[in-house]
Amino acid sequence: MAVHYHLGKFPPTELDWPQLIPLIGPASAAVARYDGTLAAIPNAAVLLSPLTTQEAVLSSRIEGTQATMGEVLEFEAEGDSPGLSEERRNDIYEVLNYRAAMRMAEKMLATLPLSQRVIREAHTVLLAGVRGQGKSPGEYRRIPNWIGPAGCTLEQARFVPISAEKLPDAMSVWERYIHEDAADRLVQLALLHAEFEALHPFLDGNGRLGRMLVPLFMWQTSLIQRPMFYLSAFLESHRDEYYERLLAVSRDGDWTSWCRFFLSALKTQADENQQKAAAILGLYERMKREVADLTRSQYAIHALDWIFERPIFKSSDFVASSGIPEPTAKRILPALRDAKILRTLVEASGRRAATLCFPALLNIAEGREAF
Image 1 (cartoon, rainbow, N blue to C red):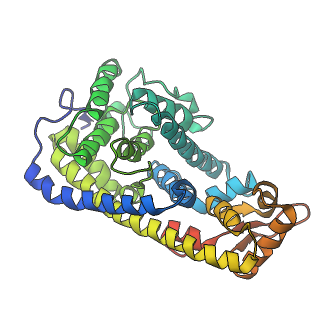
Image 2: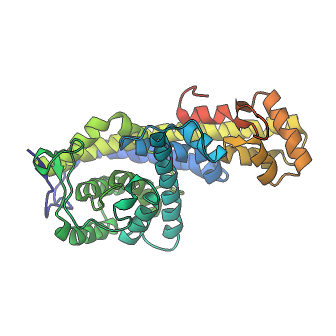
Image 3: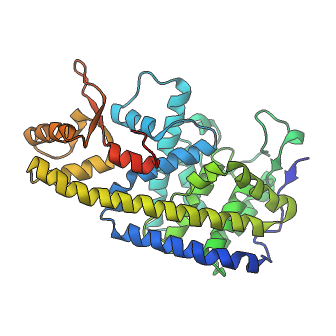
């Protein structure tokens, strides 16, 4: 029996605060610790760019894509990867669109509040030129949709979101709640995410947009200093519980259990994000000294920043676009390779330049020895 959307019950009038309060403190403290590390990172957008890509990969994976961070970065470096299947190539484009949508939303939020307008623009970028492009990018759905096994009928669905004619009003209620003074910002965010997923306002891309909302809201409400918070690893590894908790909101009116789940996710991921960000900062500080000693070049830091932003790259791109004089650039790369700071992923052949990677940074982002 399909669960139907909880019409008229958002925002909930009652939550079981005694259940939530013991979780709010630790989650808030973990977010604050992470933000402290974020504040200490010079040019966080550059140094944490692998984490941003990894978030895009994992958020897309929750929706069924299979691409890995390595594949995405290698695809970007090479402009294409000939051995890839059409399916995997489509997966990669979706990940790249996720990152682009996030960047565009960040740009808009510099001058606009978080709103339906920002969400719709982000949706347009998210679906540009990928599998969902025929599904009205940037437009709310005008037809019913439902969630369940592939190809299921309405009767076989697990969940039926709000009807299309009631959607615009419900989105306005959702938008107003973003700007309300709530009892707790993290609980407010939990409710906003659940409601967005339940409304399912678009024909495609709702899950990814709902997860994008997390760092954007945290940034807008000054919980973090940059819109860089990575929640999808927890949600991907607890996917069944994630969906079940969301379903229970509409089925049982159980907003409190959803909030408990979400606060646990925030706490776990804030700790993990903090450890990864600190490890990346530590690596950067260590590499600054090491690369300067190795290359004896005034361009050492410049080269390092370029490589941090693109931890998989073609040697020819480094020479052409790093802004380092060509003879110096051509001298720096072999020095870094010989010192095992860089590793060759794809050997040069004919006129094709070698593809190099920076394993220490990629392994921190992956959380394991992947390179």
